[in-house]
Image (cartoon, rainbow, N blue to C red; front, side):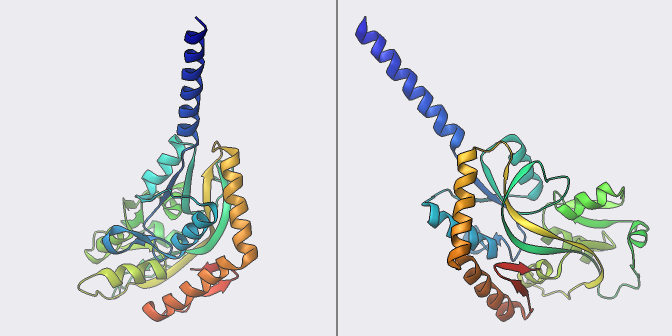
Length: 264
């Protein structure tokens, strides 16, 4: 009887440990948004913020693989699962109480682009409303912003590449993006198409590593502490300097920097 009782206790402990491990398991998810994060050779995630996350993983001795998925699916995953680290996502009033804001990594502009030879003139949101179709990336903060403003002329796709393709094929009259995203996307195009022209800057946002509000508190604290340590050691700023130089060399674009933050 005593042996049976001990075995039951052991089974209970093993079961609790297994559930605990499953509960605390971490997923790290990013989205295609160059040069912050994008699929490099063989589909392996690369980018400025990817390097920041890898530095944090080394600090934490964390071996979690990085997953690359569309933005809409990434947000949905964070809504369905607690222990998820997402990057890079803009801090907005709507998201403020839904996530832990682990570390700011960059500032992102919200810009409207037209085909190079377009005769349209876009000077305001009112002008943008008059267009028949505006391309956006599904799940992107800029899509959410325009939806909240009541835009009904948006055409959503899953990637910035598709967004640019829609503009080049005249399926939309304008797209919402930024100069660095477009530069990287154009660089991947085999036919080296002409870059679209900037028509309007809507605003900008601070972009972060984030975790859902219901994430394990100790897990959130560990990542926040690691981020603080790397900031104090200057490692995050070193990564920013390296990418500032890489973007200049590869894209011939001057990117401003504020400490470890790159200003896109």
